[in-house]
Amino acid sequence: MAIIVPNPFPPPVVFHGDSSSRDNEFMVAGGFAVSGKRVAEIEANIATLRESANISEFHWSEYRGGDRRDAYHELVKYGYQLVRQGHAELHIIISRFKGYNHKRVAGENKDTSVNRMYWLLGLHRLADYYGHDRTIHMRLDHGNDSKDICNMRNELCAAAYNEYDTRPNCIRSITPVCSSKSGIVQMADVIVGGVAAKRNGVIHSPKTEKGPLADFIHKESGHTAWDRDTYKGARGLTVWNHKTGKKKKVPPSPI
Image 1 (cartoon, rainbow, N blue to C red):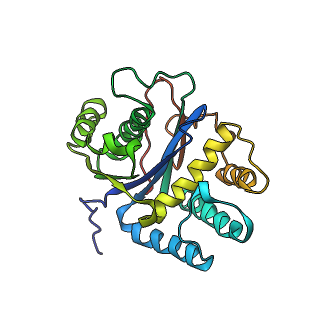
Image 2 (image 1 turned 90 degrees about the horizontal axis):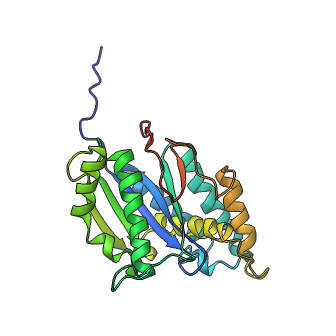
Image 3 (image 1 turned 45 degrees about the vertical axis):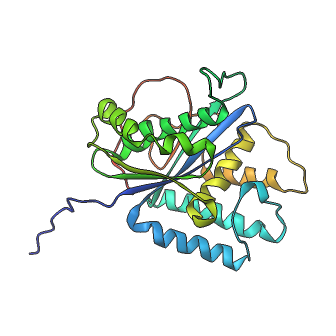
């Protein structure tokens, strides 16, 4: 009888993230955590969706419905299918930006606050969930709102080690990426944009068809409402309306 030996070196987790609605009441950041062994497969499937609809890039801000509606719906369904099948996990953080002092010290602004949101996701989701036995790579849509965190890998790893007793240097890289080069970032962009629209109660022009897409994104998620957090220790889809709270026990990852 063959003896199956557990793999002592499980594949890394790659998080593909984006943010939305920095100028509205609520800011949303989030993305898909995917096993490194599945990245190429997922990218290929998203590329097929783009090519079949003659779309150069999926993007929430550019959505206008019409003959692209079906492709965007298929993208959203594919993202949630990955979550339901345990092939990805979707982590979302929502922070109230209205009335928040983004300039606590000289040089800070809204971009600084978004970087802090990525820090919170990196520490309290990625490191806490995967950093005990996996290495982690963060791929964030490039811009000033991710520039700071991309230069703070050492600090984030130290915080993760001290806070959650993760393996040393569990986060191996934090890299800005152009969304046009990453289908998974595009998928995060569309879903995060839809979450932000619903959370902010945005009323869209009927011509854009963004309202129905935001409704579709919410319905397909199976989550009750974006202003409600998922239960402590949830896996698959996690929603965190940022506020202080008790630490949670985290079950094993399926990805």
